[in-house]
Image 1 (cartoon, rainbow, N blue to C red):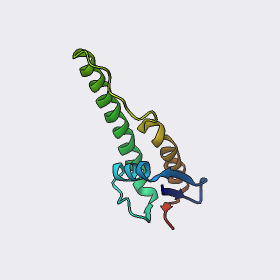
Image 2: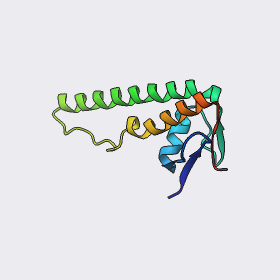
Image 3: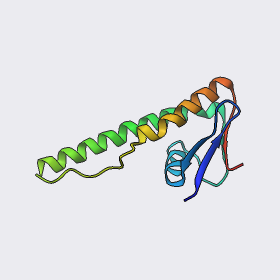
Length: 108
């Protein structure tokens, strides 16, 4: 399985498996192409988009669990590693890079 390797001059590399990296890029409004860049001025909106997606995912999962319980059905299974856990290192990377004024690139 291939990976996305996010790089910056401010932090160590961040590696994500392709499906997870693709989802994060789509959430922040980036084309999940083999190569790309997140500019420092794009990072505040990207961080907020990820935080909003985490809240939405958690609310959706809670609703699905409650609906299953109300119907007497077993609760649905979700990925053991949540979007909150997957996105936390990327959010931290973006915050550090924004402060330092450096971009994040992948595939280069």
